[in-house]
Image (cartoon, rainbow, N blue to C red; front, side, top):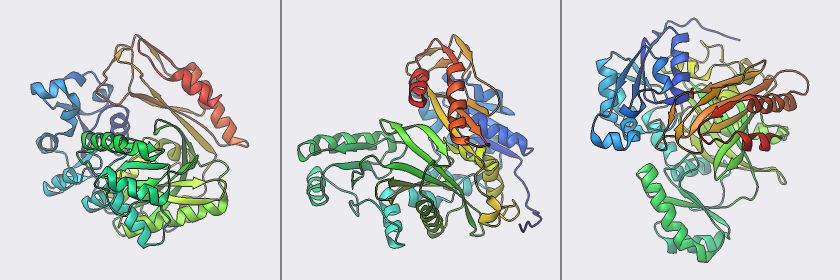
Length: 442
């Protein structure tokens, strides 16, 4: 391991442009690095738990419109940059969701002399457009799912292409992510209605109605590779995650590393993930996602998420690398070498297994009872508490429960720890998916 001595000036104060559990996670990482943090909150969100972990807090979104739609407060670029400047922040961390993949926000921060904790605006533009990302992959011989080379402009055009590649197909938002703006089309008669609905969802969710079309792969494994790059062009991967357990295109269970993945397939995916990130001049933390067909060992690139992921936790558990701290250090100008990650050998193999379950509220209301699980090999990243009001406008994620094990038989032990933790988790007053998660892991 070649580790250089860093003389990079660290950040001193971060604006956390997010809420909930990820804002808490960022605040904790900032504290560990000796940084102060500034939290933001919409008026109806003043009791959100993340405001108890930051050095100071600032309310955003005082207008009647923001009261009615509190999400818009966290999407207000001007207001967030103004708070960062007024509170003396030298960097902004967007977390995931909201403005995390917004190139305009990243550019505005840079223009104001505030570091954006994430990739460059150019990388956000590239990977924020799934059609451009597919084209980049094709240009460097990374396999993609058969589909449109450009955005499809009409249902008629989509029908013509679908007849050429064969049903079933998937309609996807070109600017999409997080499982939104996606529709399965089984036959030609469904296309017109599906196209209209998908286009409407894409416009509402991402402000961009552009769609593209792909052949639907039946029962694939969803494998994603965590990458980390510095400003000197160095890149490493931090192994893979299996996110195949999904409901309505939303990830539910995540595992690191992917159990039973063929070693040859794993290696080829690693090579292609690094090749794609390098071609896109990627810096900071990101995730390159693939579909794997178990029967044939074929795999296909589907997208690159240029931000921290909800499931970054399982990677941390098996590598011992704090990904959010690494994001801050890379954004400050530190090289991977200075962080002890000069080569892939420095990353080392994964240590055991980690399994994450996403606990979500299934109805709004006030939490009347709340007790998180604990114990050896159990981690909980959460934002719930007794008395907390769950609002339908926000992401329903309440907690991420992670079980990990680093001994023989680690995978089954990690599953067992996550299962027992879910059985011990108590949430009263609001509907939740705890029993569904228990059933899945059982």
